[in-house]
Length: 318
Ligand code: SF4
Image (cartoon, rainbow, N blue to C red):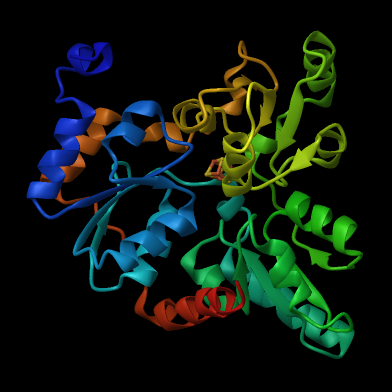
């Protein structure tokens, strides 16, 4: 029996998954969840990959180990399914930074100011209400294609992540108007510590998420979303990588590409690279959620169709 399961007096992750299967529940876990939850899941991935897998699997009940906006996305793409989450309070600083009513007011302000309504692109890390108020969604993996699908003379408002939006403006030569939001985890990566790590590990390859601030991105060899990171490490052999994203991602890298060495940025001694919202989901809460089939995540009916349309516009171009 694993130490964690024994200490918590819980079934092993595989036993939880088998129990869920027998009871018609699909367990999804984001790559930023801890190893126990990843092992218990039927699928591990980024939020959109997971939501799409749930829709493709035609799941009737989904337990989403992730944060609230991710479970909402699963509900939007699988409206007939019961969707529940181990801890209803698992939120997201980035999603919280963009309230739908503020977005709508800003869209109206910009329309008056520019004499033309801007196209609003929303990074998938936002609430269902924001998805409903925007025109098209993007992920960190497809953001470039989504932005490039909009004509160059069309004003664009990009929400909610100013770092991802800034990186897109730099690399695509665009001048999108940026919402002033950020992820509290990626915002805390320190460029000074990263420089020290690079000096201590010459030859290490730095891969950072585009949600990182520009100084950290500028010190990186690759800027990639989580799916792009996984692809790169799987194609590499015997490399040392410094990973500029949530540190639990390394669990997945070590499992799927064990031939490499992974060092979390800004440093193993610092827990600020763990998302406090993701950490609210624990093995005990997962086990309780499976038995209770709750707490359930609902999407307001008035947001459902518009949010799905924004997601479908993205899916049509990738
Ligand atoms: S890592 Fe950042 S963007 Fe992801 S859920 Fe946590 S706070 Fe939100």
